[in-house]
Image 1 (tube, rainbow, N blue to C red):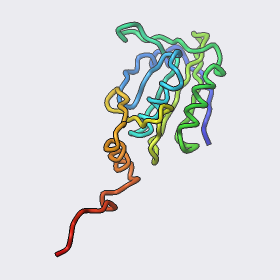
Image 2 (cartoon, rainbow, N blue to C red):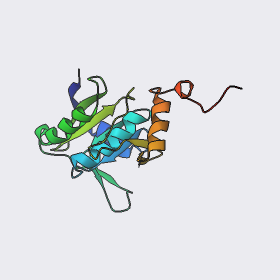
Image 3 (cartoon, rainbow, N blue to C red):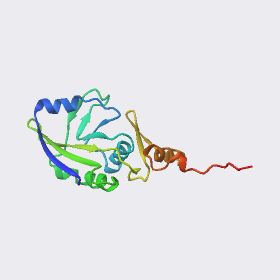
Image 4 (cartoon, rainbow, N blue to C red):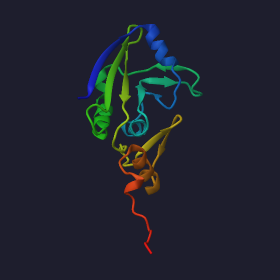
Length: 166
């Protein structure tokens, strides 16, 4: 079952989140991200090693300063949650934390994406893969097949060869 939690954070906890560096396992998104664009990151994490996304954290132009910039209520995240639960194939593939802080009057959404056994496609019908801090589309048949090999969906041992016996 998909898990939803309400978390109360101290100002120090909130600052620790703001100070996290984006990497191959963690990303921060502003609240203005579209659900479709967010689905690229969800797909990328699910198709790689999993990861965490904080939605409602914005940054200045050069990404030097991040700040808490969530929605007034958790209901504002419903469309994002609907898309994520639609594209993730299993109930345990993701969980959601609504993060509240005593010093801010908005809510941020913390999404935890597990590595999945299936290929997860974004809303644009492409699978993505998290490589470094990028979500790379796997938009060729060869890239998709390699992703299927990496996930164990297909095995090289199952492939036919063009060998003829003499």
